[in-house]
Image 1 (cartoon, helix red, strand yellow):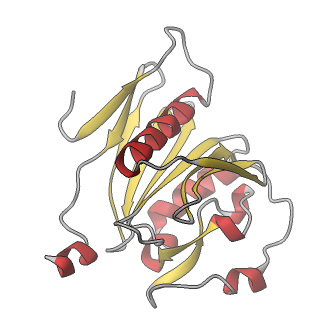
Image 2 (cartoon, one colour):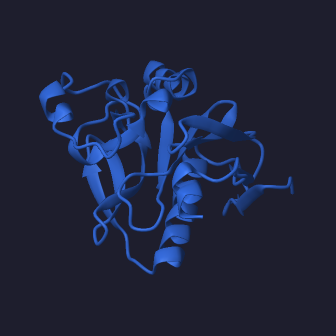
Length: 203
């Protein structure tokens, strides 16, 4: 195993269907969250995507589904109504509007450098240009915060599964891991690029 990677093993011996790795990854994320918090998670459907929600804390934990064409025009009025915790944030879509994402529970405070940056946009554009692309997003939090401090973005295509990690506190992509289609092990980035601003302020 490569250092600073976590792996989970696929449950089938044969070549998996196109979204099996994404679903296995989401299962791993949910087990990890429940083990750390002791809380049960609930699923909510919106625009064909499944939002795994921590109702007690009022925050989404992860989202998964397949990219699709938008079903409606972007509602900029509702988007502007999303509160922001930081002046350096955008009202970001977890699942981009261009990929079929909606509003409300699909909105988060996202560092604008990430939201408008080439790495994040490249994933969105790739999935939007290829409807049916399996995608999943994991939101990681510090304590009881409702603004994510880390965001993992996974997508699957003919080349395999790619998981990119973004530091939402410092506004940068940390790194990514790629699992080729023939592999039964999912590689997940776990290496951290130093403490976040919130962690430094508490030290």
